[in-house]
Length: 127
Ligand SMILES: [Zn+2]
Image 1 (tube, protein in one colour):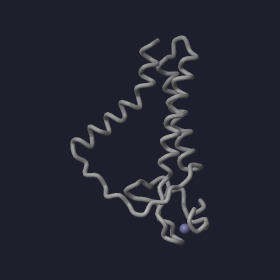
Image 2 (image 1 turned 90 degrees about the vertical axis):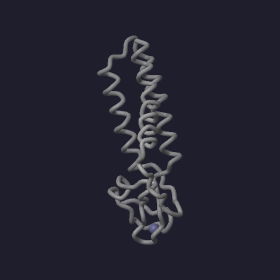
Image 3 (image 1 turned 135 degrees about the vertical axis):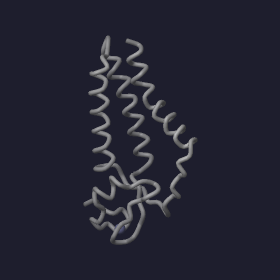
């Protein structure tokens, strides 16, 4: 169980953290405060991961797809452990209303995934 930043009780379960989102925040069973895993910490770790992929891939003359896949999978694994085990919680005042999954929402998510994949794609194309 994780410490609630508001009441200091060990009341927040790993399951609650994994299932949480800005639309379904973690509610502390002890004091009722609402939290999400810190968005700033998520953003910073994403940037660190992208830079790491870039730096490590540049160490290889010809990075193979398999090698990149293993490396990226490792980074994703470390990122998940960090997010749910160590990243700070951010207190929020209320849950955001869930977005309507319209066509533009899907397009936005696809564009986001493509943007995140640009660094590894660049590295592989360069080879
Ligand atoms: Zn609490």
